[in-house]
Length: 474
Image 1 (tube, one colour):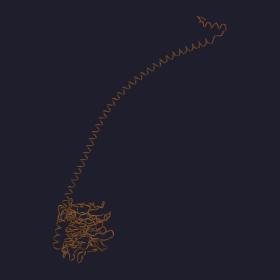
Image 2 (cartoon, one colour):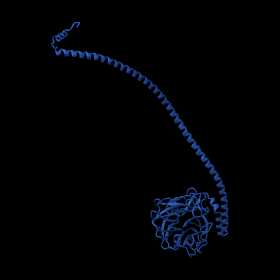
Image 3 (tube, one colour):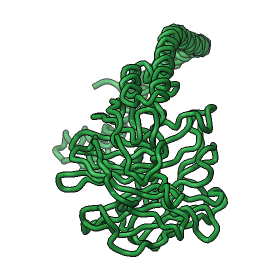
Image 4 (spheres, rainbow, N blue to C red):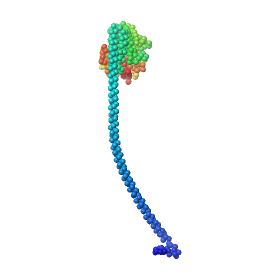
């Protein structure tokens, strides 16, 4: 070997040459030195690799930062574009709201214009219809007045049958000439005071105070709106009765015959009294051969306005007005009748007197019907029959014999619109069992005799036991 050996190496060579083995401690140190050398070399190599990796990471981070900066720049551009779009969208929305409002206003204006056009067209049509109707009404009125004048001439000549035939001939024209159409307007064109309606099956018969058609006028209907003049239900009067003053008829149906109650002057007594007549048909002719009135009551100043009522047990009662009661102009009375309806069967009872201000000392024209909640409802008229103050009131009664009380301090039906001085009510029922009243009234402004009191109808209900009135449904 060349070169200089370290002492340790020299010793090792000498030992190997002499055959003496080296010491283990020296071999372990050499191994550790070798390992350290390897580790140092590896560490130096790893450090180089780590430095390279770190340089690569830094380079990648730089690239990421540049990419992020670029993306942020792009995002700012997008945000700016989005802001511009949002602004434009706001403008569009505002414009849309304005346009929508304009459209809605235009639609509303169009609807108003269309409605105004419809109203104008309707007005034109109504005006044309009224013009046509007025022309027809004038013609009808002329025909009606001409026929009425002929009927008056026939009555003056004593020709009642001829007068009735004339009135029947012009009735349709007079119906067309009625000023009130529908509602609570009249349903018959001629004078028909103190009406009473009787239903026989599906047919209605109405009776009234004497007028152009005779002592007791009778008309007929199947629908309550259109009426046919039949004529005079009571062609002749009994010997005791005065003429041209037969008032307030009412009819009671019995088994196989009909009883007509009416008021007429008793010539001997000098008072108006109640009589009865009988017929086999509802339209008559009724015959009264009585030697004296049915009810007169000289102690009460006479009796008028009869009205029968049948209670739940089939008992028949008669209501009427006494002409004088305690110095006042009348009170309402009732008394039981015999089953045939031809005579009183008991003493009369006073039901009500004139004790309210609106009545002006007069109560008359009674009618009574059972109330759905028990007892009876009494309708009556008060005040002056020949004026617009005439009206209809009501009372509650325990029975047809009383006692009765007046729940209200005013009338149930008074003058309103063209209906002036309503009075003379009478209950009846239709084919469906509904309750009605027939009554008369002047047609304003024609109030007071010799103006006609025309037939009118009203439906009746009893909410809480109180009667309420409503116009017919036509």
